[in-house]
Image 1 (cartoon, rainbow, N blue to C red):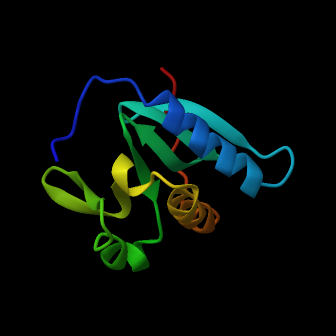
Image 2 (cartoon, helix red, strand yellow):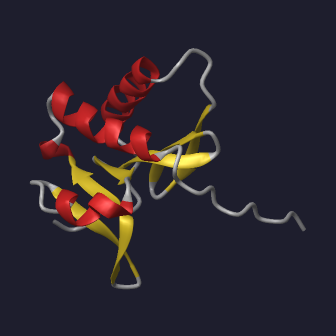
Length: 125
């Protein structure tokens, strides 16, 4: 599947992800929605957790299960400079049409979030 560029994030998919995140997180969570990766990333505790990009999601998962997850239908590794970026996968919309299938990926992202390292803050000029 070709990666689409310049398209806005799918609003329905964003609402579905947002709903599942809010149901899974404790009250008053530290969640921020931030434009990135041609879509909207959900930052939890200052770390990218899951992103809705065009009509698919990009999940930040435990790198230890990366190889197993990319074998799932509709899932592929994120690539940077032609190389797979372990711990980041794209999941196509047709693989997350049901609530349970989307919830599976959201939960994987939430499970890894406490272990994930935050990106270094850029210094302001």
